[in-house]
Length: 329
Image (cartoon, rainbow, N blue to C red; front, side):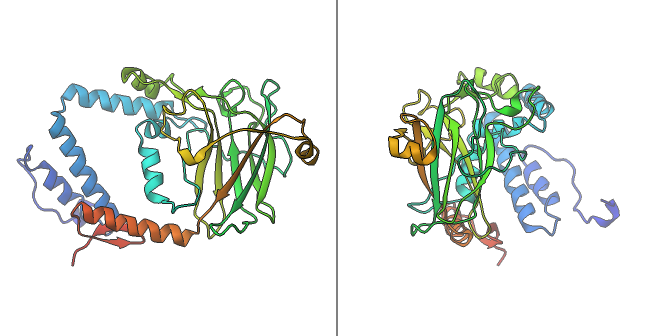
C-alpha cells in the first residue's frame, strides 16, 4: 500500500514492554472490523506465548523452519497443514465452535487431509471401492431432521481407506478415484452402498507432522472409520465420521476425532436383507441415522454460545455477521 496514504503514529524504541500494543495499533487501520479483531487477539496471544515461555531465537527459528517444511510437503493431494491442525486439536475445536450441535443431532468430526473433489457420483446400491483384499460391508443410512422427517436430495461425500489403510490419493500410480463417492439421499432420506470394513491406520508420518509426533512420544494411528460430509442449501454443513467400536485406537485417536455418539457396531446381514440389497447373508452391516439441523438453528446457537463464552472471559463484544468484534459503544 502507498505509504503516503497510511496515517500511522511514529514508532521507535520498541521493546519487550511496548511492542505488543504498538503492533496492534499498526494493524488496526483496516475498515474490516473482524480482521482487525482477529489480528489483535492473535498478536496478543502470540506475544504472550513468547513472553511466558521466554522463547529463544533458536526455538523461534526451529519453528519457522518447521512451518516452512510443512508448506513444502503440501500438494493437491496432501494437506500437511490440515494434518498439523488436526494433531494440535485445532480442527476439532474450530468445527465445534463454528458448527455447534443441539441435543439429538449428529455431532461433527474432523475432515482430515484426504478429502478430494474428484469423487464420482454414485447411485444407491453401487460399490464404492474395488479393493479385492477388503472385507465387503453393506452400509445403509438415512438423513433426517430433528423431528424424524426425511431430508431428500442431500449431497453426501463419502470416503475411506483401502484394506491396507491408504487413501486412493496416496498412490502415485492410481488411475482414478476409489474408496470415495458422492451420493444423494432419496425421497425417504435413505442412501446405501457397498464398501469394505474400515481399518485403523497411521496418518502420514514421513513429514514434519510425523516428526513432531515422534518428539512428543505420540503415536500416529487413527481408529477404523468412514468419513461423511453432508451439504444441502438451508441445512448446516456437517462433516463427520463413523468409528467402529472396539478399535484399539478408539480412545487415543491421533487427531481427536472420536465421539461416543459416532461409535457404531456392526450387525449381520440376514437372509431378508441380503435379498433386498443383493449381498451375501452373514456380511457385515453398518447402519446409522444422521440428523441434520438447519443453517438458522446452527447460526442462532453459534451466536448464543459465542456471547456466553466471551462474556465469561470478560470481553465486551458485539456480533457482526454472527462473528464477534469489539463493542465500541
